[in-house]
Amino acid sequence: MQMPILRVNLSSGDTGVFNPPEEYEEQYFGGSGLAFRLVADGPLDVDPMGPENPLYMMAGLLTGIAVPTACKGSMVARSPLSGLWTESTVGGYWPKALRWAGYAGIVFTGRAPEPVYLFIDGDTIELRPAGDLWGQDTFETTGELQNTLGEGTEVATIGPAGENGVRFASIMVGGKDARAAGRTGMGAVMGAKNLKAVAIRGGTRTKPTDHDAMMALNREYIPGIRERSEALGQFGTPGSMQAVEFSGDLPIKNWYQGNWESGAESISGQRMAAEVLEDHYACFACPIRCGKEVRVNRGDFAGTISHGPEYETCAAFGSMVLNDDLDVLIEANDLANRLGLDTISAGAAIAFAMECAEHGIIDEDLPWGSPDVLVGLIRDIAHRRGVGDLLADGTRMAAARLGPLAEEYVVETKGLEVAYHDPRAFTSMAVSYATGARGGCHLEGLTYYVEGGAFPGHKLALDDEWDRASSDDKAILAIRMQDYLGTLNALGICKFILRGHIGPVEMAEWVAAVTGWEMDAESLMRTGERLFNLKRLVNAELGISRKDDRLSPRLLSHPRPTGGAKGVLPHLGKMLNDYYQARGWTEEGLPGKRTRERLQLAEVLGGDHVE
Image (cartoon, rainbow, N blue to C red):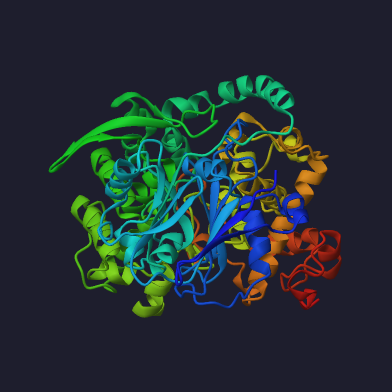
């Protein structure tokens, strides 16, 4: 299974390959797991926007193999938004192309003197001039490269946001079939390196060790995955908008308001389904068709969009800013994809600006729900114009410049704007967000899947029914989900696989069939625990500890005034105590000596952490 990693020095133009130690693959899998192990061997205190910050583009261990949803890749670097070593995941066909090209990943170092793109086609590995592509949006860049390089070329690229150093710029793959490595600003790292795109053509299908065993598992489990994810395939993630609003989970008016019943229906997947033309998109080896093609017509913006916005974007450009116009929402999503912006952070930044304007902190007319303000600020952020220049550095930095009162209106953890599931509705999300390696990320834990019944707890030796307003026993739920989901990133598995009720037992069977390793649920989960602790150790070198495991005041001290989560506040202090004890961490939130030894991490980073 082991494949080399391509090394590209953008400063000199030199390329080469290297093979990580053989034991790394079995201990850390691939994707972000392998990348973080390599990061741990290098200098950590680097400038996120400097040439010394390496950018890893990694395929998951199972990516490109016909295991359900095995389509993911990870981008890993020190984040310009949070200052932490973080990862951003992306699906579609580009990660598969990387694996089929014969590489476990690519690591970029240095900075090109002029804009370039990397082209990979068999033995051809070339840095080519990209000056004529600089300034183009992600759809234009992808289309031009595919026309130039030929059919079957897969492209990962940045838009103007990445070029202009927006700290939450994304890396986009698939062109109009837009898939985003959205979170933590990996697009800004790419832009700082003068790297416009990575284009891959050709390659050879990756083969599993035991093809017959893998296909037998597919025949056994895929029918259940399809059956349980039928609603997701029909309406996409926005199909849950009304249910999420009813439960009190939907963030409304920058996390302030309790209800938004009519608005949630207006931008729901069910409403989008009325304009659906046809099923359009599915990721590689994915039995879940979660993309729909929709038509929109507003002003000078008209046409067919390859797929409708996902739930997080509906919250970002909908409920967070009180926009209930579906056409405006789709336009905003399409524009953010073209410009290369993380929709979660962009929506949070715009809602923050609207609330600051409402309280006179920003001297601009930024009314809630205004289509022109929403679309205009998306453009201004990407091009760093006016208020957009302030917001382009993220809400934490923007609030620090605007003054102490502005910090009351920021909702972030470790510098990353919190994703759109409310820990006042599912209290386990409080400890999951607070302890997450990259900050306010829902995908590191997805604990609301268990609390809400979408994923059965017994798959992780937990209860199936939970009191979502209680703070009891939520730490162990967060730990189990973080460990399991960490393996999925490293394996290249889409987390929608949870909708199919695929747990560690089933996933371990697939890993064993593909790799030939002895693998069971216990060893899979131990790998996930190793990966989570490794990421904590890496960022502990930068000063991360208990002081950083927090939530913003709005989520800890301000109960929702109405709705399904009315009056609920998570008891984060209690959950953190439970969490550190169960993890085997110190009271300061650092992995203890016994934990490091048990997970074979005692010698990583010198093993000199405070007990």
